[in-house]
Length: 124
Length: 365
Image (cartoon, rainbow over all chains, first blue to last red; front, side):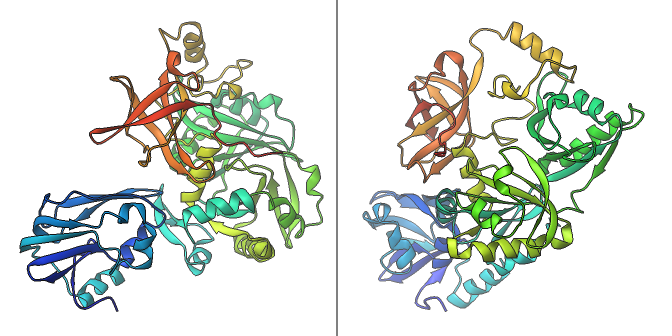
């Protein structure tokens, strides 16, 4: 079972909400599915993000994928070490592998709880 | 979607399956980088059941092949194999193929790309209708096809057969019994390593695959998917249809003139002769590129010289063997010299690239 203390997008991003700030990352499933990560491009603090829109690119040996924001708001913190330590994503996608923190004004309408997210994985 | 006879074996081995040219194929098992390393250092097994397999026989088989493909089939000795192409009248490439001349009986065996197999069969059958005695038989379903590639490929295969594999040279084939299965065996591949391709009866294919995997396990032999195969062939400078070559490219600009023999009359010959006589100003050539960028130059990204856009990246990958990015592109001949500095575009950014000689990787012999 994946962590119950947060919400998920079907596109494999997660967000953990506390005091109006959403911490955003991607799931262990996404990390395993991308495999052999080579590049991650994160935006800077102050960048506006929109729920359902891409905020970053992640590149594996075989493909480039967009990472979508679960919330709308402004980035207040970025995990700047992560692009140089992509193994962190493999080891701890739900913890040290967080990507951005967003002071948000709205959430995506289609956020899923852990059980509903896992149900979508069974269908893949 | 079509399945090869090894489909169940892939699923048991935990492969990630993807659609490829209408077939349900393994793209990776343990991981692309791990599989590439295994092939360069030990060996890997590759299911090639999606490739088209076609027998051509009859008294006019040679005449038929001379007409439809650009290499000289008359020069292929029994038991030998040559790389060749089907061309259009305008010299554009319809497919790249391997032509095997039967070691014992008369006739030929062709291996063609999965994506072009229907077109190739139609082309062969239409041509065969013009000859009194040329038969085209699609054996894709009756034969399996897979490869073992890597430095230990010969030792692993030799352990399962009484045939003396040291007598089977590169680009030769022969009948043999391996792990109790009667089959054809060729010393060919698409990775730049030593290795073999097996053509067992469809019903014996999984038995043979399992036997090689079992025999190779102690030597670190692993199953490999299309992901590893694509990077391995690019490292070895081998073209992939739909990338380096297509109907809009001709064999001469693609660096494949070794497979074009003007010793016989074939479809596309006149166009290639015209091109040779007058290729136009600064004709383009296929070149290799390397790039130290963190971004991988991928198919379709634009290549630039200064502000001039030269065309798209044809194939690109991170090469773990060479520890740099590698790619192919067509550039004007005046910019084809190794060392020429170019750039490629990723969205609105430009990343450095340098023209490099092909192949990027050559194994030590």
